[in-house]
Image 1 (cartoon, rainbow, N blue to C red):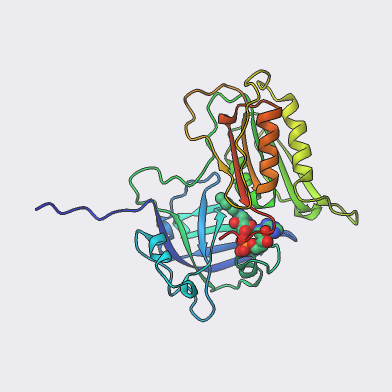
Image 2: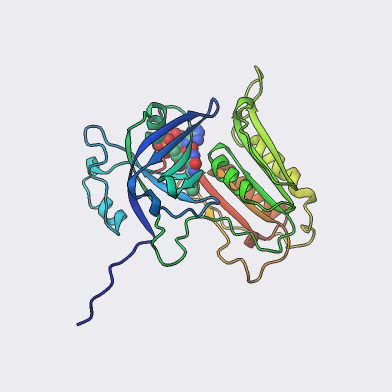
Length: 310
Ligand SMILES: Cc1cc2nc3c(=O)[nH]c(=O)nc-3n(C[C@H](O)[C@H](O)[C@H](O)COP(=O)(O)OP(=O)(O)OC[C@H]3O[C@@H](n4cnc5c(N)ncnc54)[C@H](O)[C@@H]3O)c2cc1C
């Protein structure tokens, strides 16, 4: 008789509690989570994403799944016992201290995650679905895959992408040319960021002093359109190609290069995340008008204006 080894999932649930809260700026709140098992949370870095299962009134996280098929378990629950799930980025992992940091954009009490963060207190419990360090292989869950010979790196996003972009920037080697564009709600939301030599960071606040705020995505779009006009190695990398339309109100815009080795030019590598309508417009511009090689661009709609991300 053969005994099957227990299945080790690439992602698993972690029951955690808030151990620290720090207001970084008017729009950003850093929440530190701790939990006995967090030493087993894989410190992959880059734009590592996790799921947050938020507490239900009166039930907390008592119904959160714990098995290897966490999503199937969650789906099998009656709707009133399904903890709301939202996607966030790991800003920092400290397995030895059993801690991780998540930076929340505070956009009001319009959604369960932002509402929870706005009221969070030390000791509050949530569940995370995060990469499992015991999994014997790559756990995945991050999309930063620049080809080694990319002529230039362009990393751009809105405030929801700031945690991912900051983690990426801090891990870049010195001397690797990179342009970073970050649209944020206000001038006071510029965060300290240790960028290596060769990395040029531009913060784009929608509201400066008492001036009327720019519409969401307008500054990011204008800055990226300008930035790709003179990228090293971009000239002639690809003929403009036609794209399928993506309905960002009905589906998720998530188009990421899967393989870094084959069929790529050594032109620029672009990583782009934020509000889905803005990312869709930029996808059209970069691929259809600027003629950048689409297989070297990660397009990620992190959220959609006016739409709950469940
Ligand atoms: C891979 C990935 C990583 C992410 N990382 C982070 C992260 O580290 N930090 C972070 O803050 N967000 C991050 N996000 C975005 C986050 O998941 C969404 O903003 C999510 O909608 C927040 O959930 P909610 O419950 O607050 O609002 P929801 O219930 O989803 O939405 C309620 C309403 O709020 C609006 N809304 C949602 N987000 C915003 C916003 N930022 N500004 C204004 N209006 C908004 C929606 O359009 C909707 O009308 C990430 C998303 C993805 C896919």
